[in-house]
Image (cartoon, rainbow, N blue to C red; front, top):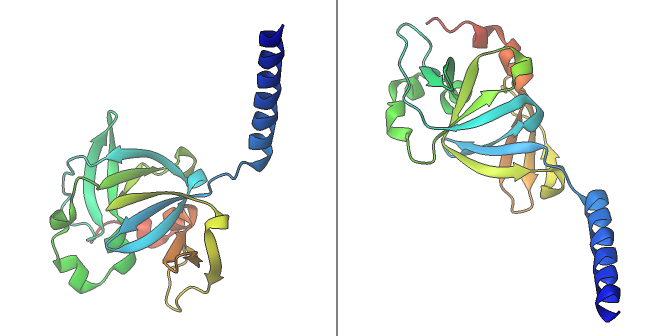
Length: 179
């Protein structure tokens, strides 16, 4: 009889904990990444699969931020160098992006709903984030591109830039890769 009572109590405690976990669950909003030392937040609803680094075939006569194409899961994907795209300066274009490839380099596909067969090259993943992990939101820099949504500061004082991938793929500059 004591075993039945203990089992029943255990089941009740488990049911209470599951109910509490469902109501208290904080869902992640962003995929946190780093590119050239800067922190970015990619919306999870606009992001796709995360791939380990794959060899990229350079495409001639394209803009410096268009790293080339990579074969992923049987399909060809355009590879966008996030750091080069955001910083897009002549000095950056002259540097060799090959020097930045490490064991932590990743390719993040864009969600299929965005209808762009491309992946974003980042230097490393930093995990998932939600709004409760940030202390404040700030204004974007004056010359920020339209796909910069807002600047956030986390509880440790680190600055993060939120990106809107849907706005990025709608940019005429993004769609015109020819140099």
